[in-house]
Image 1 (cartoon, rainbow, N blue to C red):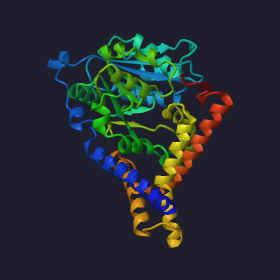
Image 2 (image 1 turned 30 degrees about the vertical axis):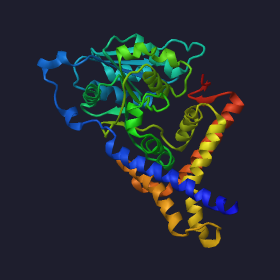
Image 3 (image 1 turned 135 degrees about the vertical axis):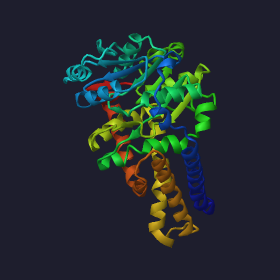
Image 4 (image 1 turned 60 degrees about the vertical axis):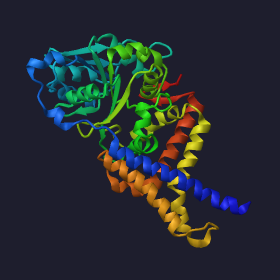
Length: 389
């Protein structure tokens, strides 16, 4: 029995890391990307009518530092039939003033004043629902206030949407990371997307659990958005992006995903504290709001990304076979998967060597989320207590 246990742990970790590495390499090669050539190609004026109208919808709460630059970049887009609508979600800073100043007299810009948050709604979901109600475009393109749009990026998103026949196209912007807190946490999003979910499964398998999305950029066909009930159908969800993607699949509609390929950029969090709180906001909801599942996930990541390092360091003293080749192989698979997904999304591949530190940080983040849940009944974000429905 002891011999079985001795062999079981490394075999299970080997199988898990092998699958993660293969999926990461496959996705790095096959994951759709926005086409830069399509982005810089001008839209012929004679064919303007062939392009669907687009409403770029930006919810903004306390975004005075970033909203001005975002509006400037979006208003420089050359896409025809584009309307930009920003909703000031009862900000405590001068978000509205900065937005008006940045937009100037642009005829295709509107600024909405957000209504008070109704019971049972998450703030962002309520803001997006108001934005959708104010827009009559063929495509509703929801984007966060801190996403930067390079020249032609809106056209590239629509082009990808048209080519893939997507009812929902979710784009992962290229993430800008500066502080160590950001570098050790933010790229894990790419590892989760590229390493854990084969793109063919996410896009073509019918089951809603095989769905992923990024709320930083989600483009819906208006008909599909209305069919799934829009943000009203996920009014109480913290991870509304994933829930919306699941509803697209539930209604037999087409979910498609793409990498922003530097046409869209975003600095999700500025500094360690913001990254810590931001991930703490989402991590429990991302595990279905099941604390036990979050704890199991944390143990799994310690097993596959930390334990091989400990095995290498322990030398031949552990009662495990195959040292040093076996633990070094496991270590290489873990670092390799992290490095491959980083390179594929224009991150620092060398930071993969710090994966054990990243796991430690995510463990602290998970504990923060569990404490918030116990103390406040939900998580805290931008001065609000969020209780996922």
